[in-house]
Image (cartoon, rainbow, N blue to C red; front, side, top):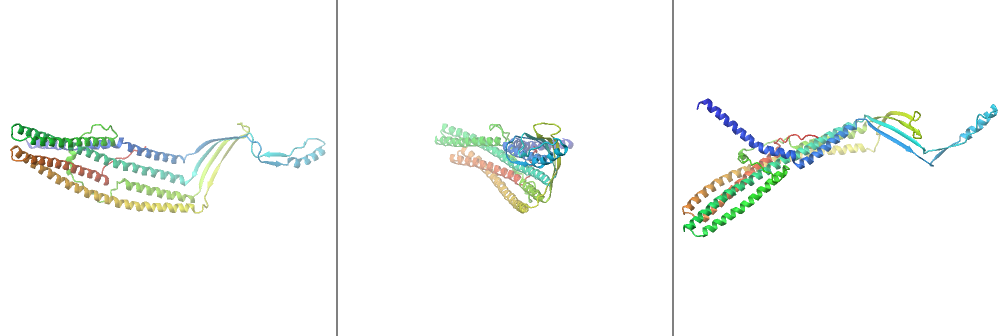
Length: 458
């Protein structure tokens, strides 16, 4: 084999190893993406986000002209009246005019009584109003936009927690399946010991006591096996629940994850900028600052334009005599409200200071959370290494005990004790691996290193 061929083969093996590693990572990543897309709780959170988006659309709609049809028709009888003494004022004048003209061109008139409530009267019009200068509408729209961002962070916060839950549930499933495998190997071992004990009794090399002890050990392992199988089913059901799938759906097993626990994670010393809790507090602070500006708009006037076109008069008619148009401007300027607006602004400023204090406190809590989680992670990693050493030792002890037992140099109780210690050590090592993986997922959560993607705004 020449040097060039060796380099090509080495490169191929490296690419294959990288591909295999990427494929192993993709298995869990694909499950995470399935969960993020289909989890019912995430969908519920997205409903709230969609409602916030619709609130923003409603705020934008306030900038457009508002058009409405208003029709009113009244029938009235009785009520207040006003007396108009037309006869008293004009009849004497009309009499004098008749005498001067020697005619009756000016008849006598009666005093009139006019009813305040209009009878058989209608007012049918189309009303158009348009905000010309209203700063509160702009600030209201900006607040709605910030509330969408705030709701976005709530959704992303749950999505990050969901990623952590899915990973831990998957690790729990892997551990439970490995426990089934460990007890399966133990069951094969004790069954082999039982057959060997029966062979000794058959050849009169031992008493029946060794068979009964071997059978008891088989029963003990079978009981542990049944519990492990049940744990695996429960872990699979919970994992499928998070992915919103039928509980009995098969789960692809990725054994390489258990081998990746040796890849030690590095501690992030600073507060992660990607933590949704901090983003949410920043968004709340911005919303309060905008609301402060909104509270201060009482110092500014509000100008609206209006235009009415319709028909108005006695009798429900639509003709030239009843047609009318009316347009104009409306100015509203609050002069004094007992300092209510100033007090409201002071309350809002207190809320802003409270958010700033809460932000600093949350930063400290996150740093503490990262530190304690990383310390626990390192402790779990050391415990896993110790458990691995224990597994290697107990396996060697069992191998020697089994060899001496088959040669008649060890008691059966020594073999049973060595097998029990080996199985328990393997279970403890499996649990230690689970603890490291769990702490890895927690570290990934508190340091916000996993890219959860951007929630689509609907």
